[in-house]
Length: 466
Ligand code: CMX
Picture 1 (cartoon, rainbow, N blue to C red):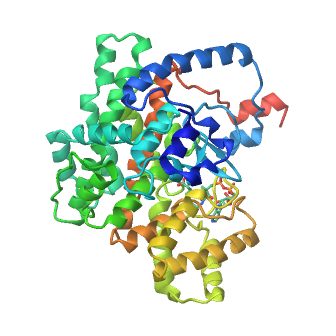
Picture 2 (picture 1 turned 135 degrees about the horizontal axis):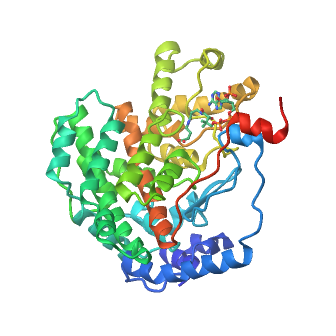
Picture 3 (picture 1 turned 60 degrees about the vertical axis):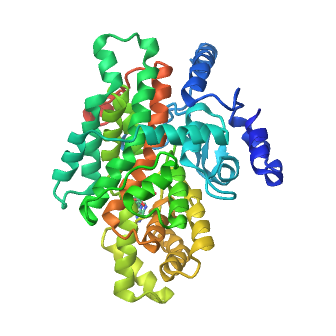
C-alpha cells in the first residue's frame, strides 16, 4: 500500500485531497511486521540505491565554498546526507516528504482527530513509511517494555544537586546508560561492520524507551517530591512521559506532548544537535555517547535552550510593562533588548526564512485549546510586532518566529511552569530524529566525518592576501 493510500484509508475523505507530495514517503510491504523486521528488509534496498546513485553521480558538484562560509558557521554548505527530513527555507520541515499538517493527517493518533503519535513519526523517519495503527501500538508496547533504567543511573540522578541544570543532569544520565551499550559490547567482541546497524538499532530503541524515566526523574527530583510514577505497559510513549512528569491526568496535556514530541524530533542534519550526534557517531561512538553529545549542543541558548529563554524573556516583559502593554511599549522593550546587545529569543533561524511551521502547529493547538489564555494573547501580539522591529533593526536574515517562540506558553498553561526544564522536553523529542539517522548511518556504512580546515595564515597565502 502506498503512503498516500495508507493515509487515505486512515483518515478518509480529507486525505484523498492530499497532493502528490506524499510520494516521498514510500510504500510498506506489510502492516504487521515489526520495525526491526521491516528495517531488515529495507536496508539492503537502501544500500543498493545509494551504491548505484554514488556510482552514477558521485563526481557531481553540490556547490562551492567561499571564505565567508568558512568563517560564517558553514551556512549553506551542502556536505551532509540526512534521510529523515529536509528543510525548505520558505516552507519549513518535511519529514520523509510529509509536511507537519500532512503528518497530522497521515500518522496514526491515539484518538480520532488527535495529534500524531511520536512512535509513528519515528517509524516514518527510520523507514520512510507511514506505519499502521497496529505497528504503532507494537512500538509503544516495546518502548514501555524497555523503559526501566539501571539502579546506578537512578542513584546518579538522585545525587545531582537541584541546582545542576536539568540539561546537564540529562546528559550525565544518558552518558551513564552507555554502561549497557549493545553496540559497544559487540564492537569489542569483534562484530562485522555489515552488522553495525543491528546493535545500533537495539541501543537506540533502549535509549528512546528509557528517556521518559530519566527525564521524569530529573523533573520530579528538582521540582517535586522525587517520586516517579511507574510506566504503564498498555499506554503510548507520550502518555507515559506525561505520567512520569505527573501530568497524565490532563488529556489535553498528553495531546500536547504527542504534538510536541513529534514536531521537535528532526530538523535535517546541519543543526547543532543533529550534526553533533551524527559527527560523534561517525567515530563509531555508540548511540548513548553520540546522543549525549548532541544534547550538550541542544543545551546552548542559540539552539534548544531558546525554548526556556523565550518564556523567561516574555514573563520579564510582562512583569516590566504588563500583559496589556501597548504596541509602543512593546516596541520600546524590544529595542531595549536589541540595544542591550541581546537577541530576541525564539525569533530568527539559520536556514528558515518564514514563520516556522512548528510555531504554526503550536499556535493552532493554542487556538484550539487555550484561545482565551492571556499569555497566549501576549505571544500572539508579539508575533505581530517582533518581525517588524527585527526587520527595522536590519541584522537578522529571518525576522519570523521559530519553534521555540511558542512552546513555553503552552507548557505554562498546563502548569509545567519550570522554564529551566523545557529543553529536556526538546531533548526527549530530538532523540527520535537524530538516533533514527544513526541507525541509517551505520546501515549505509557512513565513514568517519573529517572535513578539511585551514588557518587564516594559510587562507591568506592561498589567495595572495597580505
Ligand atoms: N534577535 C536579535 N538579533 C538577531 C536575531 C534575533 N532573534 N536573530 C539573528 N540576529 C542577528 C544575529 O545575532 C547576527 O548578528 P551579528 O551579525 O551581530 O552577529 C545577525 O542577526 C545575522 O544573523 P542571521 O544570519 O540572521 O542568523 P544566524 O544564522 O547567525 O543565527 C539564530 C540563527 C537562530 C542563532 C539567531 O536567529 C538567533 O540567535 N535567534 C535567537 C535565538 C533562538 O531563537 N534560537 C533558537 C533557534 C531554533 C532552535 O535551534 O531551537
